[in-house]
Length: 495
Image: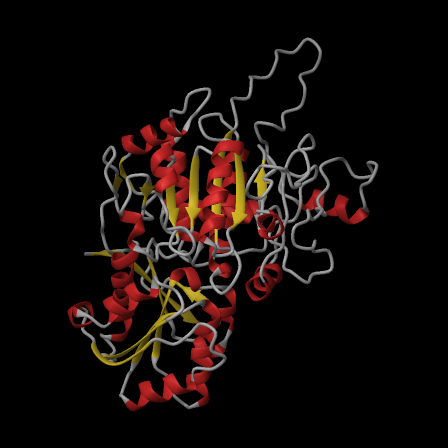
Protein backbone atom coordinates (compact mmCIF):
# COMPACT_ATOMS: atom_id res chain seq x y z
CA UNK A 1 0.00 0.00 0.00
CA UNK A 2 2.94 2.38 0.49
CA UNK A 3 3.23 2.63 -3.29
CA UNK A 4 -0.03 4.55 -3.28
CA UNK A 5 1.46 7.38 -1.26
CA UNK A 6 4.08 8.33 -3.80
CA UNK A 7 1.74 8.40 -6.78
CA UNK A 8 -1.55 9.79 -5.49
CA UNK A 9 -2.35 13.38 -6.40
CA UNK A 10 -4.06 15.09 -3.48
CA UNK A 11 -5.69 18.51 -3.55
CA UNK A 12 -7.72 19.68 -0.57
CA UNK A 13 -9.79 22.86 -0.62
CA UNK A 14 -10.79 23.73 2.94
CA UNK A 15 -13.47 26.42 2.98
CA UNK A 16 -12.03 29.40 1.11
CA UNK A 17 -8.72 27.89 -0.02
CA UNK A 18 -9.96 26.07 -3.07
CA UNK A 19 -8.12 24.38 -5.91
CA UNK A 20 -6.78 26.32 -8.85
CA UNK A 21 -5.94 29.73 -7.43
CA UNK A 22 -3.92 30.81 -10.48
CA UNK A 23 -2.88 28.73 -13.45
CA UNK A 24 -1.89 30.19 -16.81
CA UNK A 25 -2.29 28.61 -20.24
CA UNK A 26 1.37 27.56 -20.29
CA UNK A 27 0.83 25.60 -17.08
CA UNK A 28 -2.22 23.91 -18.54
CA UNK A 29 -0.31 22.96 -21.69
CA UNK A 30 2.64 21.77 -19.62
CA UNK A 31 0.40 19.54 -17.55
CA UNK A 32 -1.04 18.06 -20.75
CA UNK A 33 2.42 17.21 -22.03
CA UNK A 34 4.15 16.14 -18.84
CA UNK A 35 1.59 14.97 -16.32
CA UNK A 36 1.00 16.27 -12.81
CA UNK A 37 2.81 16.52 -9.53
CA UNK A 38 1.51 16.26 -5.99
CA UNK A 39 0.18 19.46 -4.50
CA UNK A 40 -2.35 20.38 -1.82
CA UNK A 41 -4.46 23.27 -0.64
CA UNK A 42 -5.50 23.49 2.98
CA UNK A 43 -5.84 25.75 6.00
CA UNK A 44 -3.03 26.68 8.34
CA UNK A 45 -4.15 24.24 11.00
CA UNK A 46 -4.02 21.20 8.77
CA UNK A 47 -1.35 18.54 9.00
CA UNK A 48 1.14 17.59 6.27
CA UNK A 49 0.54 14.69 3.94
CA UNK A 50 2.43 11.76 5.40
CA UNK A 51 2.31 8.00 5.39
CA UNK A 52 0.38 6.56 8.30
CA UNK A 53 0.63 2.98 9.45
CA UNK A 54 -2.51 0.98 8.81
CA UNK A 55 -4.29 3.54 6.66
CA UNK A 56 -4.16 1.44 3.51
CA UNK A 57 -4.15 3.96 0.68
CA UNK A 58 -2.53 7.36 0.40
CA UNK A 59 -2.39 9.44 3.57
CA UNK A 60 -5.05 11.93 2.60
CA UNK A 61 -4.15 14.65 5.05
CA UNK A 62 -3.91 18.26 3.92
CA UNK A 63 -0.82 20.46 3.89
CA UNK A 64 0.01 23.33 6.29
CA UNK A 65 0.12 25.77 3.37
CA UNK A 66 -1.81 26.15 0.11
CA UNK A 67 -0.03 25.18 -3.09
CA UNK A 68 -0.31 25.71 -6.82
CA UNK A 69 -2.56 22.93 -8.04
CA UNK A 70 -1.67 21.04 -11.19
CA UNK A 71 1.74 22.64 -11.60
CA UNK A 72 3.40 21.01 -14.63
CA UNK A 73 6.07 18.48 -13.87
CA UNK A 74 9.53 19.80 -14.63
CA UNK A 75 8.76 23.43 -13.78
CA UNK A 76 11.27 25.23 -11.63
CA UNK A 77 9.16 25.19 -8.51
CA UNK A 78 7.42 21.85 -8.96
CA UNK A 79 7.59 19.44 -6.07
CA UNK A 80 8.73 15.87 -6.58
CA UNK A 81 5.99 13.26 -6.69
CA UNK A 82 4.80 12.28 -3.24
CA UNK A 83 5.66 15.61 -1.62
CA UNK A 84 3.80 18.85 -0.99
CA UNK A 85 4.48 21.80 -3.28
CA UNK A 86 4.53 25.26 -1.70
CA UNK A 87 2.37 28.04 -3.08
CA UNK A 88 3.55 31.39 -4.43
CA UNK A 89 0.34 32.88 -3.07
CA UNK A 90 0.66 34.27 0.43
CA UNK A 91 -2.34 34.25 2.77
CA UNK A 92 -0.96 36.99 4.98
CA UNK A 93 -0.31 40.69 4.27
CA UNK A 94 2.62 41.78 2.12
CA UNK A 95 5.78 42.03 4.16
CA UNK A 96 4.67 39.48 6.74
CA UNK A 97 7.28 37.09 8.04
CA UNK A 98 8.18 34.51 5.44
CA UNK A 99 6.40 36.34 2.62
CA UNK A 100 8.54 36.83 -0.47
CA UNK A 101 7.91 39.76 -2.86
CA UNK A 102 6.67 37.24 -5.44
CA UNK A 103 4.15 35.84 -2.96
CA UNK A 104 2.97 39.29 -1.97
CA UNK A 105 2.54 40.25 -5.63
CA UNK A 106 0.61 37.07 -6.39
CA UNK A 107 -1.59 37.60 -3.37
CA UNK A 108 -2.39 41.15 -4.44
CA UNK A 109 -3.20 39.98 -7.96
CA UNK A 110 -5.53 37.19 -6.85
CA UNK A 111 -9.25 37.97 -7.05
CA UNK A 112 -10.73 39.24 -3.80
CA UNK A 113 -13.39 36.86 -2.63
CA UNK A 114 -15.33 36.53 0.58
CA UNK A 115 -15.66 33.01 1.92
CA UNK A 116 -17.50 31.54 4.89
CA UNK A 117 -14.21 30.85 6.64
CA UNK A 118 -12.51 34.15 5.85
CA UNK A 119 -14.73 36.51 7.85
CA UNK A 120 -12.80 38.77 10.20
CA UNK A 121 -13.47 38.75 13.95
CA UNK A 122 -16.23 41.20 14.94
CA UNK A 123 -15.21 44.55 16.42
CA UNK A 124 -15.74 45.01 20.19
CA UNK A 125 -19.41 45.54 20.89
CA UNK A 126 -20.49 44.39 17.43
CA UNK A 127 -22.92 41.57 16.94
CA UNK A 128 -21.15 38.22 16.46
CA UNK A 129 -20.89 36.93 12.90
CA UNK A 130 -23.27 34.10 12.04
CA UNK A 131 -21.81 30.67 12.72
CA UNK A 132 -20.33 28.83 9.79
CA UNK A 133 -22.18 25.58 9.14
CA UNK A 134 -20.38 22.24 8.99
CA UNK A 135 -18.00 21.76 6.09
CA UNK A 136 -19.19 19.44 3.31
CA UNK A 137 -16.45 17.19 1.94
CA UNK A 138 -16.53 15.97 -1.64
CA UNK A 139 -13.97 13.81 -3.43
CA UNK A 140 -12.68 13.12 -6.94
CA UNK A 141 -10.74 9.96 -7.76
CA UNK A 142 -9.48 9.98 -11.32
CA UNK A 143 -6.85 8.71 -13.71
CA UNK A 144 -4.88 11.96 -13.74
CA UNK A 145 -1.73 10.53 -15.30
CA UNK A 146 -0.96 8.64 -18.51
CA UNK A 147 -2.57 9.25 -21.92
CA UNK A 148 -6.01 10.07 -20.52
CA UNK A 149 -4.71 12.24 -17.70
CA UNK A 150 -4.87 15.53 -19.58
CA UNK A 151 -8.61 15.68 -20.01
CA UNK A 152 -9.47 14.03 -16.67
CA UNK A 153 -7.19 16.59 -15.04
CA UNK A 154 -9.05 19.44 -16.76
CA UNK A 155 -12.38 18.02 -15.58
CA UNK A 156 -11.23 17.82 -11.98
CA UNK A 157 -9.65 21.26 -12.26
CA UNK A 158 -13.06 22.61 -13.25
CA UNK A 159 -14.65 21.04 -10.17
CA UNK A 160 -11.97 22.89 -8.17
CA UNK A 161 -12.92 26.16 -9.88
CA UNK A 162 -16.53 25.55 -8.87
CA UNK A 163 -15.47 24.85 -5.25
CA UNK A 164 -13.76 28.21 -4.93
CA UNK A 165 -16.58 29.98 -6.79
CA UNK A 166 -19.21 28.36 -4.56
CA UNK A 167 -17.32 29.14 -1.35
CA UNK A 168 -16.93 32.76 -2.46
CA UNK A 169 -20.72 32.91 -2.68
CA UNK A 170 -21.55 31.35 0.68
CA UNK A 171 -20.91 27.67 0.01
CA UNK A 172 -23.83 25.27 -0.48
CA UNK A 173 -26.78 26.17 1.73
CA UNK A 174 -24.28 27.90 4.02
CA UNK A 175 -21.87 24.96 4.15
CA UNK A 176 -18.25 25.54 3.06
CA UNK A 177 -17.07 22.92 0.56
CA UNK A 178 -13.87 20.90 0.97
CA UNK A 179 -12.54 19.04 -2.07
CA UNK A 180 -10.13 16.08 -1.96
CA UNK A 181 -8.57 14.70 -5.14
CA UNK A 182 -6.43 11.62 -5.77
CA UNK A 183 -4.82 9.99 -8.81
CA UNK A 184 -5.59 6.29 -9.17
CA UNK A 185 -2.97 5.98 -11.98
CA UNK A 186 -5.34 3.65 -13.84
CA UNK A 187 -5.00 0.98 -11.15
CA UNK A 188 -8.35 -0.59 -10.06
CA UNK A 189 -6.99 -1.61 -6.65
CA UNK A 190 -5.73 1.91 -6.00
CA UNK A 191 -9.04 3.39 -7.14
CA UNK A 192 -10.99 1.19 -4.73
CA UNK A 193 -8.62 1.89 -1.83
CA UNK A 194 -8.80 5.66 -2.38
CA UNK A 195 -12.59 5.69 -2.60
CA UNK A 196 -12.84 3.72 0.63
CA UNK A 197 -10.36 5.92 2.47
CA UNK A 198 -11.97 9.16 1.36
CA UNK A 199 -15.30 8.00 2.77
CA UNK A 200 -14.12 6.32 5.96
CA UNK A 201 -11.29 8.67 6.97
CA UNK A 202 -12.11 11.99 5.30
CA UNK A 203 -15.89 11.98 5.56
CA UNK A 204 -16.60 12.36 1.83
CA UNK A 205 -20.36 12.48 1.28
CA UNK A 206 -20.31 12.53 -2.54
CA UNK A 207 -17.86 12.01 -5.39
CA UNK A 208 -17.74 14.41 -8.33
CA UNK A 209 -16.31 13.26 -11.64
CA UNK A 210 -14.71 9.96 -10.73
CA UNK A 211 -13.23 8.36 -13.85
CA UNK A 212 -15.04 5.06 -13.31
CA UNK A 213 -14.47 3.85 -16.86
CA UNK A 214 -10.66 3.89 -16.67
CA UNK A 215 -9.66 2.37 -13.34
CA UNK A 216 -12.91 2.06 -11.43
CA UNK A 217 -15.61 -0.18 -12.72
CA UNK A 218 -16.11 -1.69 -9.28
CA UNK A 219 -19.10 0.11 -7.80
CA UNK A 220 -19.64 -2.38 -4.98
CA UNK A 221 -18.30 -0.07 -2.25
CA UNK A 222 -20.38 3.00 -3.16
CA UNK A 223 -23.40 0.74 -3.66
CA UNK A 224 -23.04 -0.85 -0.22
CA UNK A 225 -22.30 2.44 1.57
CA UNK A 226 -24.77 4.42 -0.58
CA UNK A 227 -22.35 7.18 -1.58
CA UNK A 228 -23.33 9.07 -4.76
CA UNK A 229 -21.00 9.57 -7.71
CA UNK A 230 -22.15 12.64 -9.65
CA UNK A 231 -20.70 12.69 -13.15
CA UNK A 232 -17.79 10.73 -14.58
CA UNK A 233 -15.64 10.57 -17.70
CA UNK A 234 -18.62 9.32 -19.71
CA UNK A 235 -16.88 6.77 -21.88
CA UNK A 236 -18.59 3.64 -20.57
CA UNK A 237 -22.13 2.43 -19.88
CA UNK A 238 -21.27 2.00 -16.17
CA UNK A 239 -22.98 5.32 -15.58
CA UNK A 240 -26.31 3.57 -16.17
CA UNK A 241 -25.71 0.43 -14.10
CA UNK A 242 -25.99 1.69 -10.52
CA UNK A 243 -28.50 3.98 -8.79
CA UNK A 244 -25.54 5.48 -6.90
CA UNK A 245 -24.08 6.87 -10.16
CA UNK A 246 -25.85 10.01 -11.33
CA UNK A 247 -25.16 10.67 -15.01
CA UNK A 248 -26.21 14.23 -15.96
CA UNK A 249 -25.40 14.01 -19.69
CA UNK A 250 -24.94 11.26 -22.32
CA UNK A 251 -22.40 8.54 -21.48
CA UNK A 252 -21.26 5.30 -23.05
CA UNK A 253 -23.33 4.28 -26.07
CA UNK A 254 -25.52 7.45 -26.10
CA UNK A 255 -22.35 9.58 -25.92
CA UNK A 256 -20.62 7.72 -28.77
CA UNK A 257 -23.78 8.18 -30.88
CA UNK A 258 -23.73 11.90 -30.11
CA UNK A 259 -20.08 12.22 -31.15
CA UNK A 260 -20.96 10.77 -34.53
CA UNK A 261 -24.04 12.98 -34.68
CA UNK A 262 -21.97 16.13 -34.17
CA UNK A 263 -19.60 15.15 -36.99
CA UNK A 264 -22.57 14.39 -39.23
CA UNK A 265 -24.04 17.83 -38.52
CA UNK A 266 -21.03 19.38 -40.29
CA UNK A 267 -19.80 16.72 -42.72
CA UNK A 268 -23.02 15.33 -44.19
CA UNK A 269 -24.49 18.67 -45.40
CA UNK A 270 -21.11 19.31 -47.07
CA UNK A 271 -21.37 16.00 -48.94
CA UNK A 272 -18.61 14.32 -46.95
CA UNK A 273 -20.49 11.14 -46.20
CA UNK A 274 -17.79 8.45 -46.56
CA UNK A 275 -16.57 7.71 -43.04
CA UNK A 276 -13.46 6.18 -41.46
CA UNK A 277 -13.51 5.09 -37.80
CA UNK A 278 -10.36 5.03 -35.63
CA UNK A 279 -11.11 3.82 -32.10
CA UNK A 280 -8.21 2.97 -29.79
CA UNK A 281 -7.27 -0.60 -28.92
CA UNK A 282 -5.74 0.25 -25.53
CA UNK A 283 -8.78 1.20 -23.44
CA UNK A 284 -11.90 -0.94 -23.08
CA UNK A 285 -14.28 1.97 -23.45
CA UNK A 286 -13.04 2.38 -27.05
CA UNK A 287 -14.91 -0.86 -27.81
CA UNK A 288 -18.15 1.10 -27.43
CA UNK A 289 -16.96 3.76 -29.87
CA UNK A 290 -15.90 1.18 -32.45
CA UNK A 291 -19.19 -0.73 -32.21
CA UNK A 292 -21.37 2.38 -32.41
CA UNK A 293 -19.51 4.16 -35.18
CA UNK A 294 -19.41 1.15 -37.49
CA UNK A 295 -22.94 -0.07 -36.78
CA UNK A 296 -26.44 1.09 -37.78
CA UNK A 297 -25.87 4.55 -36.22
CA UNK A 298 -23.57 5.57 -39.06
CA UNK A 299 -26.25 4.95 -41.69
CA UNK A 300 -28.93 6.62 -39.55
CA UNK A 301 -26.83 9.77 -39.42
CA UNK A 302 -26.06 9.79 -43.14
CA UNK A 303 -22.65 8.12 -43.29
CA UNK A 304 -21.26 5.17 -45.22
CA UNK A 305 -18.42 3.45 -43.34
CA UNK A 306 -15.56 2.73 -45.76
CA UNK A 307 -12.65 2.13 -43.35
CA UNK A 308 -12.26 0.90 -39.78
CA UNK A 309 -9.12 0.53 -37.62
CA UNK A 310 -8.16 0.03 -33.95
CA UNK A 311 -4.80 1.82 -33.55
CA UNK A 312 -2.85 2.17 -30.30
CA UNK A 313 -2.56 5.34 -28.24
CA UNK A 314 1.19 4.69 -28.07
CA UNK A 315 1.73 4.95 -31.83
CA UNK A 316 4.20 7.72 -32.72
CA UNK A 317 2.65 8.08 -36.19
CA UNK A 318 -0.62 7.35 -37.98
CA UNK A 319 0.55 7.55 -41.58
CA UNK A 320 -0.57 3.98 -42.35
CA UNK A 321 -4.11 4.70 -41.14
CA UNK A 322 -4.27 7.97 -43.08
CA UNK A 323 -3.14 6.29 -46.30
CA UNK A 324 -5.61 3.44 -45.84
CA UNK A 325 -8.50 5.82 -45.12
CA UNK A 326 -7.65 7.90 -48.19
CA UNK A 327 -7.37 4.77 -50.32
CA UNK A 328 -10.86 3.75 -49.15
CA UNK A 329 -12.23 7.16 -50.11
CA UNK A 330 -12.95 8.41 -46.57
CA UNK A 331 -13.94 12.08 -46.47
CA UNK A 332 -14.41 12.21 -42.69
CA UNK A 333 -12.70 10.42 -39.80
CA UNK A 334 -14.20 9.93 -36.34
CA UNK A 335 -11.51 9.57 -33.66
CA UNK A 336 -11.65 7.64 -30.39
CA UNK A 337 -8.14 8.57 -29.23
CA UNK A 338 -6.46 10.77 -26.61
CA UNK A 339 -5.73 14.40 -27.45
CA UNK A 340 -2.07 13.87 -28.34
CA UNK A 341 -2.96 10.99 -30.66
CA UNK A 342 -5.64 13.16 -32.29
CA UNK A 343 -2.91 15.70 -33.05
CA UNK A 344 -0.66 12.98 -34.47
CA UNK A 345 -3.46 11.81 -36.78
CA UNK A 346 -4.01 15.35 -38.05
CA UNK A 347 -0.30 15.84 -38.70
CA UNK A 348 0.18 12.41 -40.26
CA UNK A 349 -2.69 12.96 -42.71
CA UNK A 350 -1.51 16.51 -43.50
CA UNK A 351 1.95 15.23 -44.45
CA UNK A 352 0.26 13.06 -47.08
CA UNK A 353 -1.73 15.99 -48.44
CA UNK A 354 -4.92 14.38 -47.08
CA UNK A 355 -7.45 16.65 -45.36
CA UNK A 356 -10.58 14.81 -44.21
CA UNK A 357 -12.98 16.34 -41.70
CA UNK A 358 -11.89 15.06 -38.29
CA UNK A 359 -14.33 14.42 -35.46
CA UNK A 360 -13.28 14.19 -31.81
CA UNK A 361 -14.65 14.18 -28.27
CA UNK A 362 -15.14 17.28 -26.14
CA UNK A 363 -13.01 16.00 -23.26
CA UNK A 364 -9.99 15.91 -25.58
CA UNK A 365 -10.37 19.49 -26.81
CA UNK A 366 -7.29 20.94 -25.12
CA UNK A 367 -5.74 24.30 -26.14
CA UNK A 368 -2.96 22.46 -28.02
CA UNK A 369 -5.53 21.02 -30.44
CA UNK A 370 -6.92 24.40 -31.49
CA UNK A 371 -3.44 25.94 -31.70
CA UNK A 372 -2.21 23.54 -34.41
CA UNK A 373 -3.08 24.78 -37.93
CA UNK A 374 -3.51 21.22 -39.26
CA UNK A 375 -6.54 20.83 -36.97
CA UNK A 376 -8.47 23.70 -38.54
CA UNK A 377 -11.98 22.53 -39.43
CA UNK A 378 -11.99 19.72 -36.85
CA UNK A 379 -15.42 19.04 -35.34
CA UNK A 380 -15.70 18.57 -31.57
CA UNK A 381 -18.80 16.80 -30.32
CA UNK A 382 -20.04 17.97 -26.92
CA UNK A 383 -22.30 16.13 -24.49
CA UNK A 384 -23.46 19.38 -22.89
CA UNK A 385 -23.96 22.86 -24.36
CA UNK A 386 -20.84 23.92 -26.34
CA UNK A 387 -18.43 25.53 -23.91
CA UNK A 388 -17.17 28.46 -26.06
CA UNK A 389 -20.68 30.00 -26.11
CA UNK A 390 -21.96 32.35 -23.39
CA UNK A 391 -25.53 32.90 -24.51
CA UNK A 392 -27.26 30.81 -21.81
CA UNK A 393 -27.09 31.28 -18.02
CA UNK A 394 -25.12 28.08 -17.30
CA UNK A 395 -22.33 28.90 -19.75
CA UNK A 396 -22.24 32.55 -18.68
CA UNK A 397 -21.64 31.47 -15.07
CA UNK A 398 -18.98 28.94 -16.12
CA UNK A 399 -16.97 31.65 -17.89
CA UNK A 400 -17.48 34.14 -15.05
CA UNK A 401 -16.15 31.60 -12.54
CA UNK A 402 -13.03 30.89 -14.60
CA UNK A 403 -12.37 34.61 -15.04
CA UNK A 404 -12.64 35.21 -11.29
CA UNK A 405 -10.98 32.07 -9.92
CA UNK A 406 -8.46 31.07 -12.62
CA UNK A 407 -7.62 34.24 -14.57
CA UNK A 408 -5.76 33.49 -17.78
CA UNK A 409 -7.29 30.03 -18.17
CA UNK A 410 -10.13 29.46 -20.60
CA UNK A 411 -12.56 26.57 -20.06
CA UNK A 412 -11.71 23.56 -22.22
CA UNK A 413 -13.91 20.89 -23.73
CA UNK A 414 -13.58 18.93 -20.49
CA UNK A 415 -14.91 21.85 -18.45
CA UNK A 416 -18.57 21.83 -19.48
CA UNK A 417 -19.50 18.33 -18.24
CA UNK A 418 -17.51 18.81 -15.02
CA UNK A 419 -19.29 22.12 -14.37
CA UNK A 420 -22.65 20.42 -14.89
CA UNK A 421 -21.65 17.73 -12.37
CA UNK A 422 -20.67 20.34 -9.78
CA UNK A 423 -23.82 22.40 -10.29
CA UNK A 424 -25.93 19.26 -9.98
CA UNK A 425 -24.33 18.65 -6.58
CA UNK A 426 -25.09 22.28 -5.72
CA UNK A 427 -28.74 21.74 -6.65
CA UNK A 428 -28.87 18.60 -4.50
CA UNK A 429 -27.37 20.53 -1.57
CA UNK A 430 -30.03 23.26 -1.47
CA UNK A 431 -31.59 21.87 1.69
CA UNK A 432 -28.67 20.17 3.42
CA UNK A 433 -29.06 20.03 7.22
CA UNK A 434 -26.49 21.32 9.70
CA UNK A 435 -24.53 18.05 9.68
CA UNK A 436 -24.97 16.64 6.18
CA UNK A 437 -24.47 13.00 5.26
CA UNK A 438 -24.38 11.07 2.00
CA UNK A 439 -28.03 10.14 2.62
CA UNK A 440 -28.92 13.84 2.65
CA UNK A 441 -27.14 14.37 -0.67
CA UNK A 442 -28.97 11.39 -2.16
CA UNK A 443 -32.29 12.75 -0.95
CA UNK A 444 -31.47 16.08 -2.59
CA UNK A 445 -30.58 14.38 -5.88
CA UNK A 446 -33.84 12.44 -5.89
CA UNK A 447 -35.79 15.67 -5.36
CA UNK A 448 -34.37 17.24 -8.51
CA UNK A 449 -37.03 17.57 -11.19
CA UNK A 450 -36.32 18.99 -14.63
CA UNK A 451 -32.98 20.63 -13.75
CA UNK A 452 -31.10 21.82 -16.87
CA UNK A 453 -28.16 23.61 -15.14
CA UNK A 454 -28.93 26.91 -16.81
CA UNK A 455 -29.67 25.26 -20.16
CA UNK A 456 -26.44 23.26 -20.31
CA UNK A 457 -28.04 19.80 -20.42
CA UNK A 458 -31.37 18.09 -21.02
CA UNK A 459 -33.93 18.21 -18.14
CA UNK A 460 -32.66 16.00 -15.33
CA UNK A 461 -34.77 13.96 -12.93
CA UNK A 462 -33.62 10.91 -10.97
CA UNK A 463 -35.95 8.28 -9.55
CA UNK A 464 -35.28 7.10 -6.03
CA UNK A 465 -32.95 4.07 -6.18
CA UNK A 466 -33.28 3.95 -9.97
CA UNK A 467 -30.51 4.18 -12.54
CA UNK A 468 -30.01 7.34 -14.59
CA UNK A 469 -32.13 7.62 -17.73
CA UNK A 470 -30.32 7.26 -21.07
CA UNK A 471 -30.55 10.04 -23.61
CA UNK A 472 -28.36 11.04 -26.54
CA UNK A 473 -27.77 14.78 -27.03
CA UNK A 474 -24.93 16.67 -28.65
CA UNK A 475 -23.63 20.10 -29.48
CA UNK A 476 -21.14 21.19 -32.14
CA UNK A 477 -17.84 23.04 -31.75
CA UNK A 478 -15.36 23.57 -34.58
CA UNK A 479 -11.72 24.60 -34.71
CA UNK A 480 -11.37 27.83 -36.69
CA UNK A 481 -8.39 30.16 -36.87
CA UNK A 482 -6.67 28.66 -33.84
CA UNK A 483 -9.76 28.86 -31.65
CA UNK A 484 -12.66 26.66 -30.59
CA UNK A 485 -15.90 28.15 -31.91
CA UNK A 486 -19.50 27.28 -31.02
CA UNK A 487 -20.36 27.22 -34.73
CA UNK A 488 -24.01 26.32 -34.13
CA UNK A 489 -24.45 28.26 -30.90
CA UNK A 490 -25.25 26.68 -27.55
CA UNK A 491 -28.07 24.50 -28.81
CA UNK A 492 -28.21 20.76 -28.21
CA UNK A 493 -29.71 18.23 -30.59
CA UNK A 494 -31.29 15.24 -28.87
CA UNK A 495 -32.63 11.84 -29.92
